[in-house]
Image (cartoon, rainbow, N blue to C red):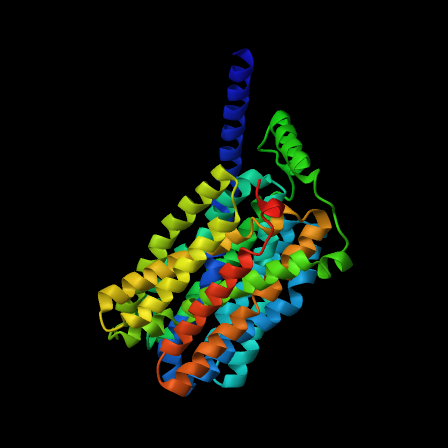
Length: 432
């Protein structure tokens, strides 16, 4: 009985400590991810005005939207290795300041070439942010707590959708023509500057490691460090060459590529899909687009909690992935009924969004140290090449067919491939 009481008391102490850590880290990191994702995909709303004003086709738009991920791909791995060596505080702050300035400068785009170059530079600037945060969380949280905390961080995607749609629509509608600038130009400027401000906050407030956290007591730092050391004990810190030749890493990259196809295909074209249903007012489109993202936040957190409680990983990724595919397909089949089509898109986006944080419980189950820095960055950079392929393919198919239907079916098929590859991961490798 005494042992049981002692164990229960220790567990309560740990739960309180991890809540303390979460309240310190997650609000700031979440705010950073919200503005990061918003700056990455607000071009989907700018498209509603800038395409006609600048004479861009859907193919030009899709290529430009995807160019972000070429720059992202080329600089992702070195950026994450620098973060591991230099520390997250300065490097994440630098990333945010540079991408905020470049995102704001998107307002000056006038030609397809300028569009391509600016999107490429935005990708270069942001390279390393997301995998850097995923790596940073492994410094603080052991594997059995990581799905929930990663899901809390990655709700930033959905929150950006909830906030970004209405805000982007309002900015574009009510600033149009002020000082001779178009609404989409004001949107890029006003949504880029918060990233710069948050970058400065990160430099001032973020701690690189547990040992540097002065807001924790010595006993609290020791307990957190002990749990991380225990978690890392069974992992091997592999060299970069072994990481890039690892079949497990490439399988994870292929899985992530499939799921990223879904998320960016929808993110970049959701306003266009909603407009094709008969909605023309940009504010109305923004409000409708927030519905699927709002539901996604709840689904992501509930599924992540279940994954950590049970220790099962693969099916917690695969089932939402399949629901994402079904929802996307139904959104096309039910397109003539606006309410049912939005419900289907909500199902699809909730499934797609849920796969992303749960996916990262797979590679972080076997990667450690510098190997984790390189492996996470490699998986993320290769997977995010889908962010180039997806909008370009959907844009090309829309130009070729006059409809987004074929593109949405393509995204659904990609999700199915991701599900099959997820189930190919050995369960003993990732399940607790």
